[in-house]
Picture 1 (cartoon, rainbow, N blue to C red):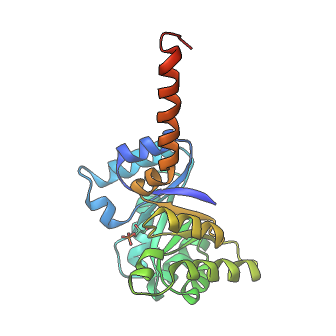
Picture 2: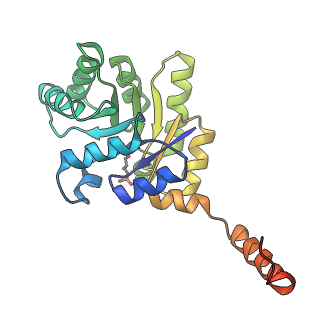
Length: 221
Ligand code: G3P
């Protein structure tokens, strides 16, 4: 399973890239609304930092025609743009056109809450589908179960759409979606930080340093 960072914040993105674990970025209108400055410049800078890795940017239009137009403008900003399209009939039409016409643009179908939605998105030509794990858990359904269902269906029917587990809220979600077969988990920076830590690691470092200090404090290594 690969990791994408779910963020539009340049400091977080630069820090996460420096860890060497990030294979792409996902953004959404809520994440972008937390940042300042020109939207186009922000997107271009994120794409530059990611080099050739995919950066999902979401359209705001609600008609397929509007989505396709918007996607054209976004795709012109950088080569590594992936167009994030909300699930629905208009979204499917847009995905079909963007994935099949002219200079094809990869699409990430977002706000996926059922296996049927994922299946439709894949058949329309989506490169990625994004089931929202946390938001399903929020309404007392099983977000990880949905990821498992979608990955099983895609494997069984030899569909090559990648499953991005989105709306990841904590490190346990990450482990669970990895076991469920997600190709990608897109994680907020705070979750990435939580994943890197363990109390026994901190304690271990503290003890090693204390032991060194007792007998070899003046030795340089
Ligand atoms: O990738 C989608 C994600 O950003 C949504 O997360 O926590 O708002 O449900 P959340």
